[in-house]
Length: 213
Image (cartoon, rainbow, N blue to C red; front, side):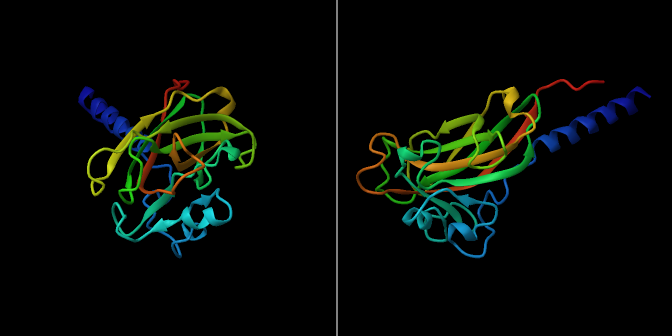
């Protein structure tokens, strides 16, 4: 009887772990879409305007990290937008944030060429929630991460993993958003434009709140 209960407990634990490991991001590998423009990339919205819309797309050129496509970003962050970069891929996930949630983020990235400034250029990811579940709404919770500066050969992608703190009460019941863009940490609005590729984005939720019996 004890053996049967132990096996049942193990199966339940494995099932819960599998559920927690589900990727909350749609099309995190950027393989799905009707074309290469930002509005043709399934699941993603581009926060950029004008010329910047075209550069916040997905690429099938030599800069692809895996598969047939990778997302493209550049380092011309627009400070006037404050919350997001001038070219920012944004997605509203289907995950409704629960009390006790924390999130794990992983992705791969590499410069598209040798012009990427290794000592100043980075990739910024933001996980956030808004008061009205709209992109334009007031942000009630966010977690922001800058990638390490790139080292090594640009043909070898850098893998990055991050973990948020437990969400604040204001985020509970709201949808989870994810945003990412390139960023020159020194000269964000001047100088030449440099490009990078991002791929294989995964976000999973872990609930740290004890369940009521």
